[in-house]
Amino acid sequence: MRLSGNGMNVAWQTGTEAEILNRECYCVSLDQDALRRELAAQLGAREASEPLLQSHPHLFASLPVFVSRRHVSRMAEIIAAVESVVATTAYRDTVLQWAPPIAGFDPGCRGVFLGYDFHLGPAGPQLIEINTNAGGALLNAMLGRAQQACCKAIESLVPGPDAFVAFEAGIIAMFRHEWRLQRSSGELSRVAIVDDAPRKQYLYPEFLLFKQLFRRNGIDAVIADPTELTLRDGAIWHDGQRIDLVYNRSTDFALATPANAALRDAYLNRQVVLTPHPRAHALYADKRNLSVLTEAARLHAWGIDDAVVNALVPGIPRTRVVNRPDADELWSDRRKLFFKPAAGYGSKAAYRGEKLTKRVWEEVLAGNYVAQAFVPPSERQIRDAASPLALKMDVRNYVYDGAVQLLAARLYQGQTTNFRTPGGGFAPVFTSPTECDCLPGPANHR
Image (cartoon, rainbow, N blue to C red; front, side, top):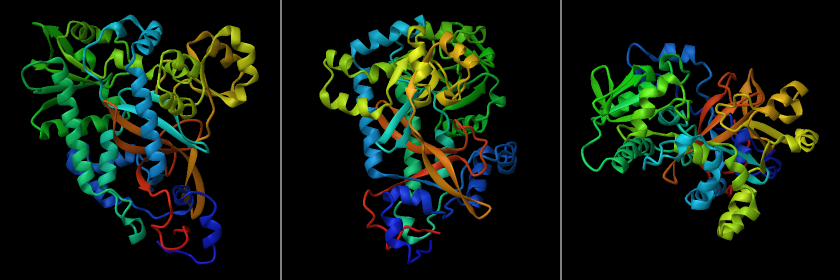
């Protein structure tokens, strides 16, 4: 990194350190050779690094994202506030009213890999949505291990390899904890990573990484379509092997399709540990829940602490359930809103209000949608053909049992994250101090 002289004071006064680094630091921290070695070691010959990088050219961004410690702390505060409300009977009784009946069954375990997704707006981090079975955790850990400090000024911001070793150990501990929450005896010995047509899924390489991680830690693992599971003798079986736990990557959140019939029956009869599960999705990921978490009067009426309400209301964009009686008002305000399906995922069928047509608006009114105050995402500058190019970014907190496990970012162009943007994809998050005294001189990094 070279620090230029003349623009020092001007550059340094136009934003926080993290904002300036995201705007002006083009130091490439991704060690491509290290990433290839990691991919080859983890995925093996059949899924070697070059075929993956060719088939997924925009999976990994070459530049990191910088987030201030103040924003990291603020995101953790909002997450803790959400968790405290979700734990209340009043909240659960309210949101389960619009959930599918299967969500009324409580299996006892928490549900792995919640994804709390934030935009870093002018007012600070804004929680735009929560997802269950949030993908990308192991891919981001592998990406983190392939980072190198480009200079002394950045060296202190780059997590060391021990951080990612600890993260992967925490993943195994998490799955074993899920097992123990439902089983009073025995050991977790076999896991099925389940999704519809798993080999056709964009993040199938991550399924392979999970399979290898489980096996390195003494837990057998298979990757399976739900139709390959059978229920007999009081257990779920795959290819003649009994399955103890299903790591559920399916987007059939209520296990409603015929393909999930055996898994649904086993889950409801406690014959398999399923994580994440329909109840976790209903409590966290239904977008209508955000309307509850942003309604201060209701939260106060429930006796929620002022500190929790004061974290949630400014920390989550105001969200309303779309109802036909409010259609005229919502249409009038549409340019300030973002519309999302209540049970949506992966930004499917989500619409920026200013781009809505009358035809799509009728579909929104007929479906289960929410209208959320639009919070523009912050940006990360990259170089494209030697010219700066601004990519949008969001920051994901991977969370289990209320604790943040890992931070990662996604860089993209367009309306939503898409893994189709040159220079975009998953990006590691480097945490910078709130103050700028860690860097000698200006932030005009090259």
